[in-house]
Length: 156
Image (cartoon, rainbow, N blue to C red; front, top):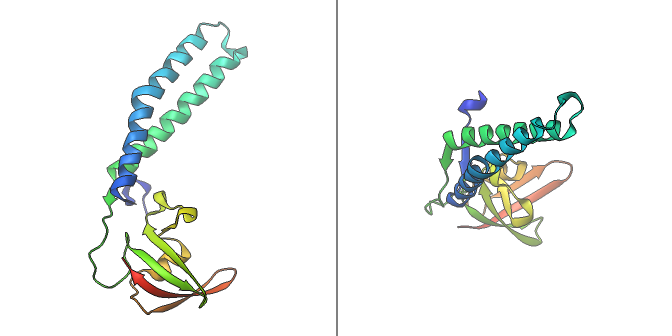
């Protein structure tokens, strides 16, 4: 899939966070980096000017991140909490029983917001993909390095 045509799935909160980062980089950090680069040029011979190279590298990094964020924001699709229609969807919060023992709670999000330590798993992850389009009571077996059984307890 062409990178520029890829859809990026974000919750409204995730979108707000990326917009804030974009504004911060474009309106504050980039102008500061340009000023730093300009000052470093004044130090003389560029071949031995480590401050110039560091400033240039910082500016290139910022420009790359700004371009990446612009691409994401141009191709974003907002994920809202799905209406209760009985199946796991992007945006669903799911409680599952793992291997017949403990219960875990996951929210299915796009890859940019995935944070397994906070219970947010990507719709493209092994577990996320396996849970999509299933309903309460369904049992799913996921095989990665270990085989794990998930039984869906609830969908919110």
